[in-house]
Length: 204
Image (cartoon, one colour):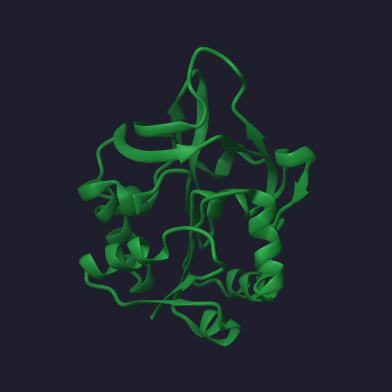
């Protein structure tokens, strides 16, 4: 069973339906026991970083997330679910994150390009990852975000995307994989990525 963490942020049903399309069952839950016992966990999210952290705290989900990550089982962060893994965000003057990945979340600078970054854009693969199996380099994924991650460890960066400059669009570290883009909204290429994730559950 794949557990999709429910903390009142994001279109959880669209993530669940995407997994169903690739032949995997997924449950939307905020039950700590269901989360820690799942074979894989997905942390999605849209909205404000600080509010998300408050909700994770309110529903007592921070410890179960850490416990699951430490178990070594596959973990997938999507959009804000990527950003929350980091130590802190500059949003609203600064807010602490889960601290699972070293680094910060920063805002796109003001310039000629619109913020938030919304729409289709290419993911240039920088590091081989099973999550990109069968996906051509610079394939287009769907983005909706105003902030981007800046990891301390260059080695965990699996792809970058150009939006007035290159920013990190996915990371991979051990059992963790996370994307700034939305695979569940990225049509066939996104479904292929979710299929690759389910393959990791089965040891493929």
